[in-house]
Length: 404
Image 1 (cartoon, rainbow, N blue to C red):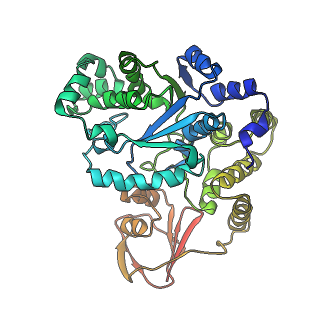
Image 2: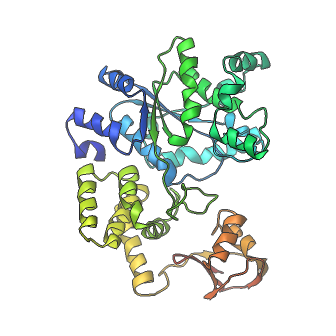
């Protein structure tokens, strides 16, 4: 099978240099990680994710592409699904305490993750683990013993907790425990290095003293930047509606890439494609020299659609995009959906048809003028619309559904 990582460079030293630098924001502790890599040992490379949403997006792919590089160099990827910790949720970046979830809910949500991960990694070589393996067996005494190794002051050092205290917002007793449990995961998995987003630095640092106490070498941290979403302002997130899903149809992925701000081109090429660094550097020079960013976006869109679908799908998606935007035509194949004839609030309609991930996203789309029903722009989300056979619903410039 064609290996794009090895195809770029054949010198192993250069491969490791790219591993340690491409798109990487920070490494803790870099000299220790280099020593581990040079030892020739197969490292246990951990990454954990809480199953809080059914679909993954390109923001996750920033980390998964780095995991792919580790895997192709022969290291062991340990993919941890936080079916235990997801029940009360990571407090990172949360202004309010999360609602507790049931075990059944988190287990059901986790089912889609592995299939989606397989678009990037060789799943047959991935060690998939669930922290319910040890979390569900932990007694109250075990938990007290674990948390006694940390102080309240240490846990409240986090900016988000400081901000909540300053704003008079509550902090649940369970929330400061989350980083400790995340650190304990690394002890149970005996991880040598963890690959994470920059927002997880505090949580993963808690593993190092726990591992040392357990007689393990402390894991090193490789931190990847958070991918900015299609709005060009905030990190990619489903709740913000600025995401590109790994399982979205090729046409939608292509169209969304074409909508990103020009300044995201090089970061996207670096973090979520397999284009060589030399070629990316050349693209950057050409952009500064006056190359039309639209041509670069086309290449980026083709690269991404090829990864998650196929080269032929990328070619067809480009043709479809040109047909809609350049020739001002509707898509050649508009998806059809069955729906009971009647009146619907627009957010309810969009969620029912899966044209929006939530009612809040649907309301934003309406307020932004991004919804057309039978080619009429709808600007009031509280408005009820009549739906009948043949009704054409359009979200943005590229997503269409016809009611049958």
